[in-house]
Length: 263
Image 1 (cartoon, one colour):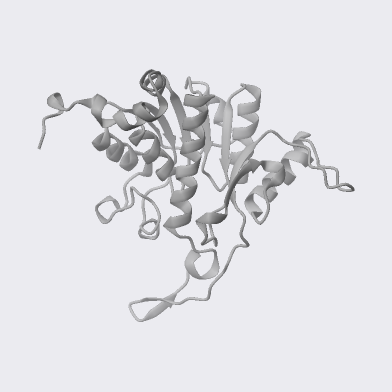
Image 2: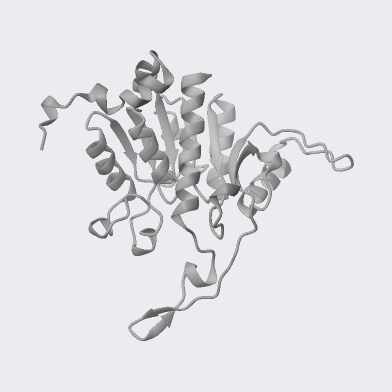
């Protein structure tokens, strides 16, 4: 095993530098990104950013790793069961690049604490990987107020086709109940623009989102445990699959990296 002192860190990300050019290293090392929700989508966002050479990432989540996370979250392993998601993700990130700085905030981001939390962070991009409407609204309002770029991810539950993932303004999303609710609340309570129904011209809300253009599926299933049938999200709610959640995470990271390095 190589000592940390003799690792050539430029070689770790030389592929990224060759792809994006001479300024890539400096940009990636000064970039600061906030990822909220370190689960099925957010954990893959962080993985992608770290492996691309981003040095400064703040990750926010209050959950702990459980058995049901194993099928789609990169930090979810048997040894990590019960661990804080943010600290498990930090440990993994620093195994990839010991020089990366992962700021862990073990909390849920909501309207009553967002100013206190985010005002302390000098960040360039905010990636919303949560499934909480109030949190999504709070992040969008904060980003608009402070002129920060926010990318909001829609629902992955009940979706099985990663080829149907889309990137658009919030006004265009469909087959996504989470983003539909978000759009409704923003228009009703915060004066975001509505589209013109008569001629089906949609006025942009200037909120970029990632979503899966697929009707969510619910499958019947039984989970056996000690000869008893138990129900959970897999039975009474939407199931999920890594091929969709990870793909959404990769796309989200790709959008942010391209904006930082190419725009």
